[in-house]
Length: 178
Image 1 (cartoon, rainbow, N blue to C red):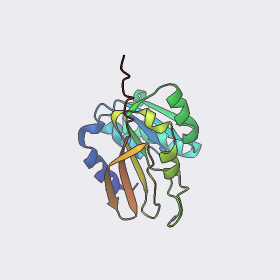
Image 2: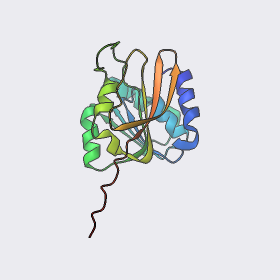
Image 3: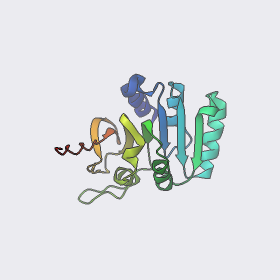
Image 4: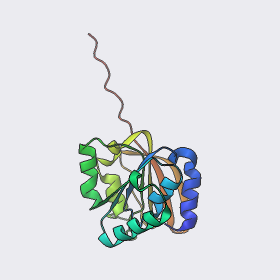
């Protein structure tokens, strides 16, 4: 995510990050997650598949002076970790994801990693009520939100689109008369 876009995202989030438990998917070298820590996040759980990127992540964390004891880095595939977190009933106030961009998909359903995240049925359960899912993707990747998500805000900068989403809350079943 370009620095200009990252700045716009964090300006939009304002104080939301302060005290938050953050899940950083496709963490890369840690830029987004570490920014959350620098803005007061109390806990950061990062997932990065590439061992090479994870080594840079760890080095960047050491050099940043941020509290390493607030960070858990899992070197694994995001789509394997999300169901595990759901099974353990983990929840976060903020989920951030800036997956590698997909190809242009006009006229057909996206197959991108961003779309796969939106389709992942366990992901909404990882958000606390009122929590946010911040998803980056390219504007040429037309995504379908589906029934799990409500869009709260969208930012556009150049080729990058940032969506701020909330989990769609299912209405409670009506009470049956006694």
